[in-house]
Structure formats: C-alpha cells, structure tokens
Length: 257
Length: 257
DNA sequence: GAGTTTCATTGGTCATACCCAAACTAACAG
DNA sequence: CTGTTAGTTTGGGTATGACCAATGAAACTC
Image 1 (tube, helix red, strand yellow):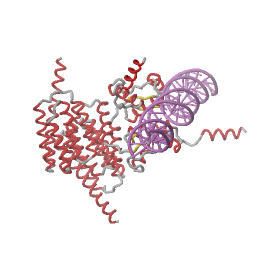
Image 2 (spheres, each protein chain N blue to C red):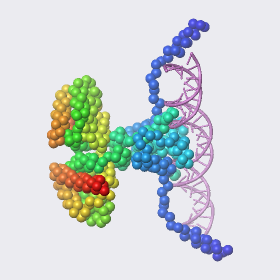
Image 3 (cartoon, rainbow over the protein chains, first blue to last red):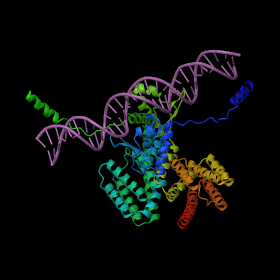
Image 4 (tube, rainbow over the protein chains, first blue to last red):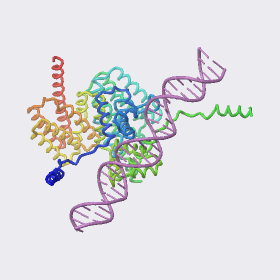
C-alpha cells in the first residue's frame, strides 16, 4: 500500500510538462473552419450555408456561438446574411469593397494626411494606366469616354467630383488587375471624401482635367503604355500640387486668422 | 354609423404614403455608433470601453446584441478584447494588419494569379523605393542593411525567403507612408505564401538578390530617388520574369506529364 | 514584506423563449 | 376562374438568465 502510494505521489507530482496553452474562442474556431471551407471552394458562390439551428445541431455549439461566427464571416465579406424564409448566410467572394472599407478605417484611424494619400495615388495610378494601355478592351475605352463626357457636362461641384472618381475607377478597371483596382477604389473614395469641401475647383481646372483625361484615354486606346504612364503621372502630380497649394494657403489663413 | 364607417374606410384606405424603410440590425447600430466615436477620438487609444453589462444598462439592449457589436469592432481591428478582471474592449487603431488580412482574403477568394500579384508589386514597390530615398532616416538605412545581411547569411530556403520579405518590408517602412506600407505588407505576404514551394532559387539567384538589394539600399542612403526607382524597377521586374518563367516550365511539365 | 490563497470582475458559452421578416399556401370573395 | 387576403412555415434577430473561465486585485499567512 505504502509503496503504491509513493508511486502515485511521484506520478502526480511529475506530470507531463505542459506549455501555457492558448484557448481560442469557440466562435473563432467555427469561423476559421467555415472560412477555410469557403476559400477552398467547398461552397460555390451563392450557395447558402446551413441554417443557424442546423449548424447548432451539427457543431453542438450554442446558437449564440454559431451566430457570432457567422457575423465574423459577414464582416469579412465572405457571406451575406438575409432574413426571412429562404434566408440564411450566402457565400460570396470578398472584393474591392472589403478592402476599401478597411483602408478607409485605417485612413481615418491613423489620421493619414492628404499628402500621403496623394503620394500613394501618384505611385499607383500611373501603373494602372500602363496596364490599362496593355490590356484594355474596347468596352473599357468606351466606359472611359463616357465617364469623361460626364465630367465635361457636369453641373454642380458634387456632380463633377463623382464623375471624376468614376473616370479614375474606370482606368483601374481597365487595368484588369483586381488588386490594383481594389487599392485604387479605396484611395479614390478617401481622396474624394477629403476633397469635397475644398473649393479650388473652378472652370479652368475642370477644362484642364477633361483635356488631360482625353489624352490619357487616347494613349490607352492606342495601347501606348509609355505615353499612358507619362501622362497619368503628369495629371495626378499636378492635381496633387494644386491641392497641397490650397491646403497651405488655407493653413496660413487659419494661422493668420 | 354607416356614414362614419365610410369615412373610416376612406381614412384607412388612404394612409400616409410610406417609403419601404430599412430596419438596420440593432447590433449594427451600436457598432456604427461606437465606431464613429472611436474614430472621432472620443476614446483615446488604449482606453477600455465600458464593460458589456454596463453597455447593456446604458443602451437597454440585450447582452447578445452588445456582444455582437463588440465582435464586429474587433474583427475590424478597432478594439481588442481581453478576458479576466480588468479585461474588456480596448480601443486600438486599425493598421497594416487589418488591410493585409482583407487583401489576403480577396487574393484567396478570387484566386488572383501570381502574375497579377507581381504586376501589382512592380507598380507599387518602385514608388516605395522613391519615397524611401526621399524620407529615409538613418535608422531606416540601418534596418535595410541588417535585413540584407540576414539574407546573405541565410541557410535554408525558408530562412532566405523570410529575410527577403523583411528587407522589402523595410523599404516600405522607410517610405514613411503608412498606406503604401500596408499595401506592401499585404502583397509581400501573399507573394511569399505563393512562392515557397517553387524551388527555382539557387545560389546564383541569392547572390544576385543580395547585390541588387545592396545597390538599392545605396540609392536610398544617398537620397537618390531616381536611382532608387530605376534599380527597384529592374530588381522586381527580373524577379517577376524568373518566377513566371518557372511557372511556365512547371505548367508545361504538368501538361506533358 | 514576500508569497499564497481567496475572491470579485469581466468576458465566453449555453439554453430557452419569443419576435420579426419573407415566402409559400390555402381560404375566400367577386 | 381569378385575384386578394389571411394564415403557415422557415429562417434570422433579440431578450433573459444562468453558469463557466480567466485574471488581476485584495486579503491573508508566515
């Protein structure tokens, strides 16, 4: 007896050494699993995941947990949740939208300055123009022209600005590179939102813009990447300079007060 | 009676015209509100939001709803949730990480091809190099050199690859543009993940890489943007060509089988 | 005063009940 | 027979209340 007790004590006192383990949340585990399956293509786009109560039965988790997991996937843009009969969580592919929203969160959260935004645009958009010149379809060119026409015929400032964004987005689309496209969408929106209260856009600026766009569109139509890059670079750069100049003037005015 | 009934019928039959309204989810409303306050700076970074039960009392929503809202903010990188006493939802600023993760979701979800990734990198990274040459601090240069030393002294392939990523990330950091930095981080990771199984990296490639990095680092140290752009362009482009060439060979092999 | 134990606080999970939205179905009026 | 209306069913949304788990703070012991 005493002997066996000693053995017991030893075996209890020297158990297997355990590392301080991590206990992930149940909802995260479920979300990770579902995400993996979705990305692997187990559920084709548009199909509905099992209803919540069904998932509860299958996973033996509570409905709260299941719902949290689905909510996570929804925020990440992997599913879209609809209510009502024949509702549920429908699989979708995360796209530009989700990138754009996270970019815009970072911009606001970090209070990224306008000049950084413009800098980034000067980096990305010429590349878009180059690729657009390489890969554009005739439909792309048409869209560019339509967008530029809309700019030329725009009335109030807000109309001009949205039409302007549309043209720049069209360039990105014509690059046929989803990633760049996503970046540009995010950027354009951010710049747009930070721009609308600055009133430096007069008729001259508008005309110059339309002209620049036209020449860039030409380069893209003619599949001339070099020209497209060069012209886009000039266009975006001069815009940036104009904005920053106004910014400075405003800052001085505020300072002088 | 009959008369009044007629009137009633009329007044019931022609009620005020209502537009088909939208009923947002309670948790979204809360999340939106909290997000707005956070972004506006009402809660400085690091401060804790009220405990869940406290929020329940204040908002008169159920705890389920409150928790869902907090979870949304967590996924968006706006708060970090810790358990235990003195735990809670702590405000933080969403950064590169959140962008990187959403980019990587899009890349996997849309099955973006390697050549698109490389294309994008060719677009962005030269711009990073340019800005790095303009704004680099001496600490940045030091980090670049350290990273390149690590590449030169790397043993197994995986070590080489991670060190390589580190150098490229260091360039982005040296640009002192958070946005570009975020993009590059996302890109580097995605390219890294898609690269590690391709075994085209031999000793020659490694030496070439180190040499190219050194010359780019020099340009950045000397604050020579033009040279930095040019060299980075060459470096990234030749890398892309190498990868795609191997890709093609592999594809042919697979086809021939 | 240092180390240990206890405990209060706060998030995590579960079970249940009920409400609301949407789509289908059957009853009803003309 | 046809169109409208009133259920009915299926699914997500919200509310409660109870209990578990983690963790830091406070009380306590030596």
